Amino acid sequence: MPRVFFNPFTGLYYFLRRKPRRAPVTPEVEQLRAQAKASLPPRLKELADEHGFTYNRVTIKNNISNWGSCSVRGNINLNLRLVTLPQPLQDYVMLHELCHLKEMNHGPKFHALLESLCPNHRTLEKELRQYKLR
Ligand SMILES: [Zn+2]
Image 1: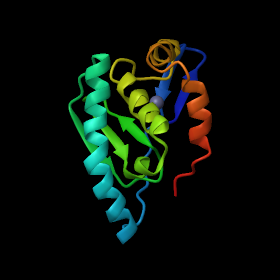
Image 2: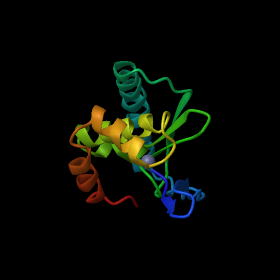
Image 3: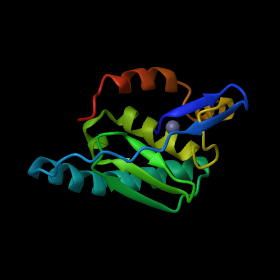
Image 4: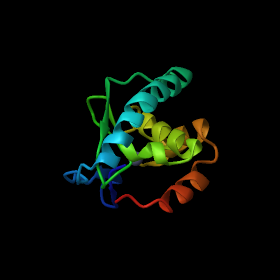
């Protein structure tokens, strides 16, 4: 979920593209990565099929700057630490990134789409903020 800025003059939202920060690779990270590779891509596919999204590629990342991201090419990146979160939060992050395939911003259309797929997304977003990435 990259930072988004709203320009009041143009009424448009912009992504601030930062270079993702990587976490050091430790045995624990490798273990999480293996778990993540086994469980996240099948779940993402399931959610995409269920809600009619098509993505290009999914990559598991060892980032400390975001839980997930989506590129204009339709590639989805998921943080390997997602597997340490409760399932509803994992699903929320995946649905959030899937919605970016159709709306590459955090504008009203994005929120309406997310709301239709995940009516409790505001609560989940708040819960997610309690889990710090490091
Ligand atoms: Zn986002």
